[in-house]
Amino acid sequence: MAGPVEYHSGKFPPNNLDWPQLIPLLGPASAALARYDGLLSAIPNAAVLLSPLTTQEAVLSSRIEGTQATMGEVLQYEAAGRTDDLDPRREEDIEEVLNYRRAMRQATDLLGTLPLCNRLIKTVHETLLAGVRGHDRARGKFRTIQNHIGRDRKIENARFVPIAPENLETGMAGWERFLHEDAPDRLVQLAIVHAEFESLHPFLDGNGRIGRMLIPLFLFSRKLLQAPMFYLSEYLESNRQDYYDWLLAVSRDDDWTGWCCFFLKALTHQAGQNEGKARHILELYQRRKEWIVEKTHSQHAIRALDFLFNTPIFNASHFIEESRIPAPSARRILSILSEPANELLKTIRESRGRRPAVYAFSELLTVTEGRIVF
Image (cartoon, rainbow, N blue to C red):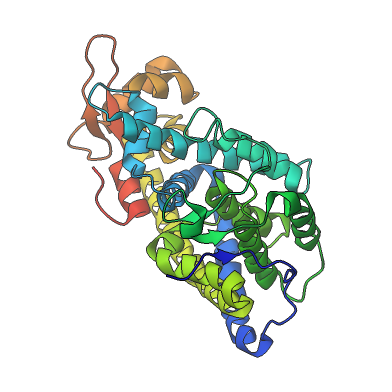
């Protein structure tokens, strides 16, 4: 068996890109991204309406690292809390997904005062691993020991060995410099930024998730998107082996061009997928906007609808307390929306004693996941 592939010392940034291979892919990627960004600009309060896509990204990025939680399970856990029949391992998976979402929100906030940099990603890494598996593995700090990626704990059996710890600070400083350089093309620069971060593997845990967070953060910070709401993990999770193989080829074969081609194709495909889902969500919102006003005859109808899009699984108490609707009106609206004849909200847990009922806006979840969830 061949030994592990080792980090490509002295070969970053690449100076051997085959631009004739890349140029035909740049136009479609840029155009798909621009179409998606144009739709984002047309969506009122995109952070609210596309909240389910943000959660789905957290689920899929975490799934690449081995978690099994579904989006429905994550949202139901948030709404209902822990239940006796929940497997503790599944609860750990869910908490990791929720941390991913918290970390992404924190990173977005930090970009208001910081550039995308090592300081920012260390802060976000600390949040990502807070209270979950890996929390005791130098959270928020670059590693000082050798790590590896592969078949078992023996480094000789590894698939890949990242940069040595004594060279890591220098490597991450070079990565940060490249992050802010002028480049012939920003999307190729992003492909290289992501691959180099994964190759350096600066943390003992959480590198893959942080590396994927960097994709929307880079697009946002370079003003290629008006919000850091780009969801690439669906493509990467569906093509996981190719994703790993092309990353490995960077260090093994010095094949930066092959990796960049894979990444540009991924961006093009997923920009189209994101645009389609966002468009369907917007269409659903417009359709249900008229419906909810007609059904409830309430001045608070749109506020209630915004709550449902932001929190498609929720408990009754949360709706009454957090919707910013007066409690009597909130109770009346919830009663109307949860009537079986209206088919808007599905009751997934009946109220019992002090335990509030839990509801799901299944129509939105179906659009987001592409399958019937509840």
